[in-house]
Length: 246
Image (cartoon, rainbow, N blue to C red):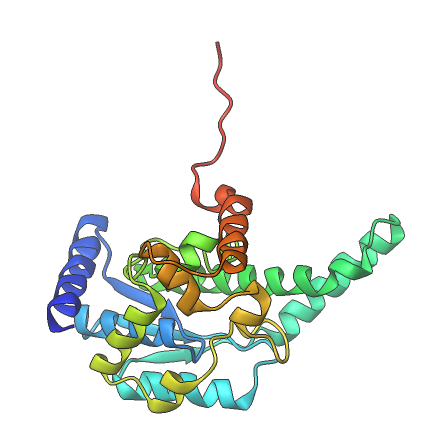
């Protein structure tokens, strides 16, 4: 783990230098992935790194975990509460859709969740611009392969330092880095709605996804679920389609 951490830290420093920026910034949710990235950017840029907490009806438990992460690595942080902004924006959109008779009640939860992720991305880039920092992503290998991230939301970042690490390997990194135990033990969740967990939403476990990525045998049902997610979310990983003039 020491070797892996040192390599990532050096890579982060190289990204800062090649981009001609002053430092690094990450959104901190109180989950394990953003906690690991928070520790890594603090090591890479001790005096030029920042954590941004962006609650949207976020539980106090998750806020406590997010603050514990910043304290555990002595990372400077700011909090931007987006609850009212998200509600106001969605209410305006909903009003227009209803007037045009195109509002679909069944799509409300997903639409609100994606709007939350994209508002957070916009916030990160606004803060990053004022600091001349890069926005650092938190996607791991399992999330990247299955497309378990919001396009132009948590997927809208400048660099991805842990994208080749499985969820299990991220946990190993977290233990090595000294992530708070409450974060290590919690169920993975994007905190998109009350009671939401990653594995419940995906229909399989991170352990199964990790095993599949490593070429190990897993139950056929889980394999089918993982492959379906990978195929359905190809547009999130592939370059944007571009019309070519003849």
